[in-house]
Length: 604
Ligand code: SF4
Image 1: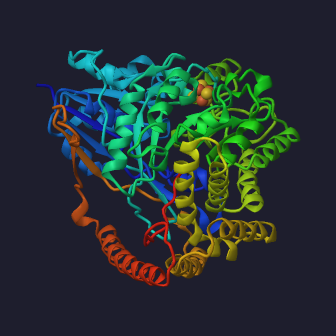
Image 2: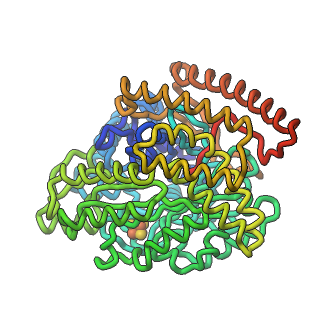
Image 3: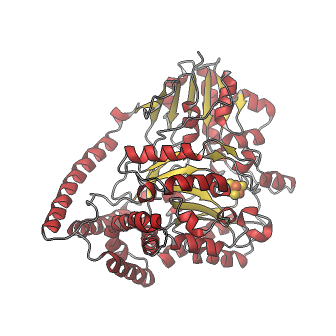
């Protein structure tokens, strides 16, 4: 029986442009530039899990391994070693290939993900053969099944993907996972020239699950974990597939057990795809957060199909219904000049995205943009570690590289100084959602979704005082105060536990402010713990997890263990104290809508 080893690149990783962690999208992009309210989080690498879950032979997946851990495993003589990576880790992966060739010469090396697309495009044939035996450009499950002689078209299984987390690092640095993950499909037919995804899958959509399967996985995940906040349904543009979304909406909306009260998901979408729906229909799917790549105010006139439709209406109507938006904007298109770029950025900020991704137009090897720039002689040699969203990698028509970086920083700053921290923008959208759903004619929105928004408002309430105290300016401070008034108007005075939590967070915020001036968080960008997932190759029975997790370095990881022990102790004591305050409130005749937790929970 063949043996399969899958791995991410070995750590330590290069950092992103401003010395931000490569694996932490919250601090690196989504809440960047928000002073002490910049959030932090951890991510998992799902593609390799999906492959491992669908092989009928045992496999091991190393997530964020150390070099020693990877070498120990490579020595065991696997038949196949698959490495999935982003181009920014190319140098690390080339060294890993050499390591496998040295320690286990009979292993066949398979490279996958966006890094494989770049590897295939950038290197000559003999160099590629020297480092790898197979390059997987496209869907990985079918690729591996074919390699192993297994039925390629067999149904795809997926469950129990590890959960990601997002929180303020000074409240809980190693926050427990609160966002699950499942995949609806891969690839995207929109064909944007800068996009690796559409290129990897030949501008096609590869469906991997039915709406019924996604619904069952959502329910399993929410049933199993009472702290789960959201599931990510991965698909590059989920709402493009109207039949799929309509069926999923019917299942969620009519579900008696949880329905819109509990089920909540994150998706990626576009202005074009969302414009196909009635706005209420989208709210009735259970969509909680969506990533929309706006890219530029001028994109519709430049042939980007995904931008047909009214972006302002899309942002306004979704946020009015309590759906938070991560907006994407890009700087350095050929049509950008030193004047219109600021007009473009201001348009983006005026849409008030809940969180943001401001990046440089980058020529990722293998994309049509990269091919065109190569023909025009405009590609520039940059180190592989800079081939990421802030790398560029080509001669921009109207800018020097440093100007673009300055514009991006200016954009993050301006967004924060205009709308305040993402956490308060979330509260605003949740208040919108609560008020909208309460007034809705639709029963599921009125009776179920409104309660979900109320719960999120209560979770965010204790952050108001700290955000108000450390607001970047008077405009933002006033907005936060107005939001608190709106909260009180809707829900009345907060419980004693919420007030105590609020005081605790304010004290922690003072502490963080002092810490940040002495030891800025980006001096020590986050690295991830090394995990080893063991898959048996057998189909799980019922709701059984398909893998076992081992932490090879846990014994040496004293700082993590101490942090967890201290957090458990502290949160346990705070939880008891808040329960006691809730009990006192109830004795005084106050109705509580939920039991206070020790920690505010936030979604993406
Ligand atoms: S819409 Fe998004 S995923 Fe689709 S091609 Fe464009 S950038 Fe890529």
